[in-house]
Image (cartoon, rainbow, N blue to C red; front, side, top):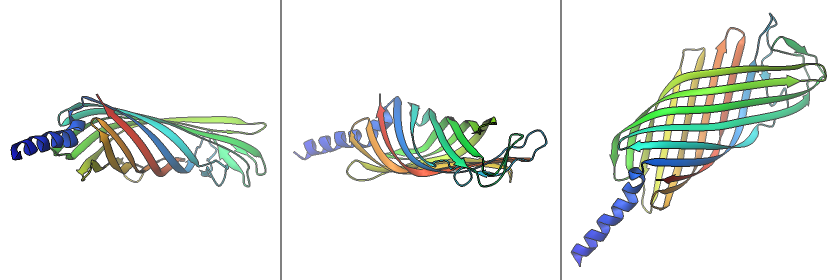
Length: 249
């Protein structure tokens, strides 16, 4: 009887702690309830741009929810992963001050509609130098790419500006196994380029695995991009909770 109990316990521990790591491919969907804090300044044709707060100056609804897709190829302690999230915000307001944007001037008391679209791509490699019994600790090297489009439109002016940014980042990831099929998982990636630019993307969540190769999670995410070049500036900060569903194959 004791031997049977030990065999059952061993099999259960393999299912509980190792099944997720045994998956070759992991597909993940996330629903992110986010809040935006954004400032943009665009100088063109010798006209110095105005630093615009998208909520205060342009009436943009900064509370938006987004879907993100992630896929991971797992090879033991090594993994390659890709993630993509498209984000979009819109606003309309009669502006209370004059705004210079992309070489054009929008006068005070002008009715302006605005939009901000960001496509965020991540391609990375992760190595877990600790991976045992549902616990792991690893390092991440990523290439991040953002495609940013901002536009302002009035009855007489319609201007748009696009910015594509690609940059490397490094970081760490961890998972801590807890009793009863629970675990805590998180990661932090980023890079700084002196005072002119920096990027941070971090998250932490609590997972539950109701069955092998399936994970449900709830957590919180913080993302910030800051870049300044001469008289141009982008400052985006996104925060908020998320829920996640992941399956392995």
